[in-house]
Image (tube, rainbow, N blue to C red; front, side, top):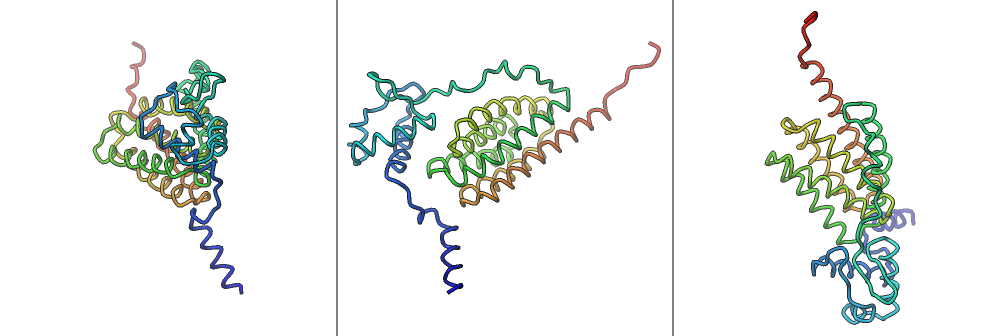
Length: 260
């Protein structure tokens, strides 16, 4: 009896397909796929609920609930009398909020990574639990893009793909506050990477790409614990590399002659 129980438990853990998903959630996923497939941009008007129901071959009620779900996630906007629109990500904090950050101040950079670790570990864990197939594909594709860029030594391409990956993970968490905060932190992280590593980042981006692959694999497997641990390790290593780079620059910084 105990053997059968363990077997069933292992099967449930390893398979997303056995988890019940309501029809409106599947319909919402298909609407996102439609937006992606047809190349709709933020602000574009989408078909009506009735038209979506017809195209998806679901009831009007299911289509309506799917739109409500996407609206709650901040992925679409409904305007009474106007229609349904692809959401414009304007809910993020303004860049001026972060202007006091001084990249030359290691304490500030450490605070940035501390905030990243707190947010992104949980975002990765939730993404492992909540990401739909389209979101999982976006996470895997972004992780692979960082691997490809690192292999080519393409720093700018790596930075762009890295940012895309972390935002895709935040999106997969289905938490709009994670999305907003991580988007702002990603902009600061880009500045840190550019100032700290550009021109000598080969080993740094190769290491980061390998860690991205581990994170993406854990999220795809639905392993929340491993996804969080992999993300925590990734952020810790990034900070450690930055500290090493600062120390290296301090040791090799030319000193002003005394008395002149």
